Amino acid sequence: MEGHTQSDVSEEAIQKMAEWVRSHFPFGNTLHYHVAVGFDRYIPKRKDRFHQCIGRADEAMYASKHSMKQSSSAT
Image 1 (cartoon, rainbow, N blue to C red):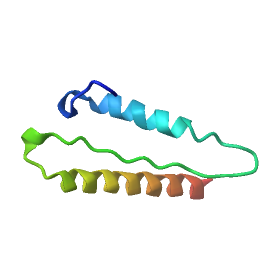
Image 2 (image 1 turned 180 degrees about the vertical axis):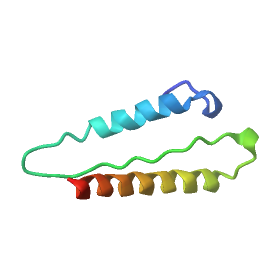
Image 3 (image 1 turned 90 degrees about the horizontal axis):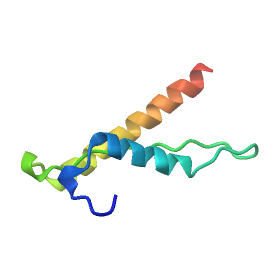
Image 4 (image 1 turned 30 degrees about the vertical axis):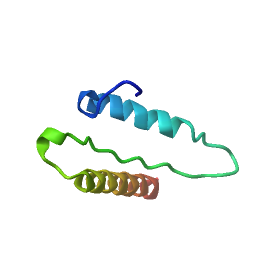
């Protein structure tokens, strides 16, 4: 993501980066774990405060965790 400003990074690019992070946690036979990633875009023109962006990213991470728990309890 080098060379990009905050406003020219698409949600698709962020999603790809999140998947890239998750891909570095291979699933093995002896250790089982899940990786939850949450993100949000900070867009200064929206007049958001940076901590609001972090809060939304945190909420997205917990939503991802919740979704993983729902999926694993269904199986």
